[in-house]
Length: 88
Image (cartoon, rainbow, N blue to C red; front, side, top):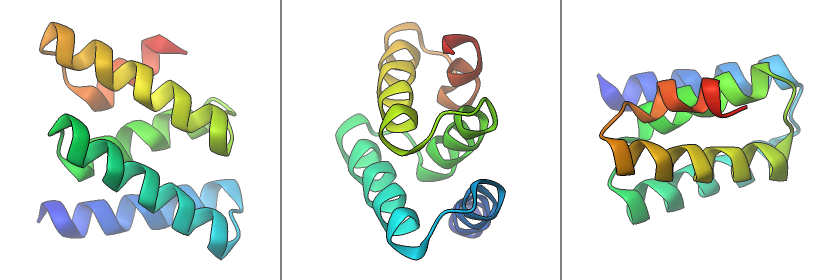
């Protein structure tokens, strides 16, 4: 289920933001790299990216907000997908 949620959320982010395929591939790579480094589930990171992009952050800015919010979540034990919202 988490894998399906991850894929669906990535498609939703791409559709909501009008990302080109190469931008979506970059987003996917960024999320997967952050997941490997942090141990946070990919579906949670994708959901966090969706929240960040809904606030109008694009590409590199969104990735930076996601990195900072993931670090904050790990430091506090919070859900990474929810920490992204107050971080913006």
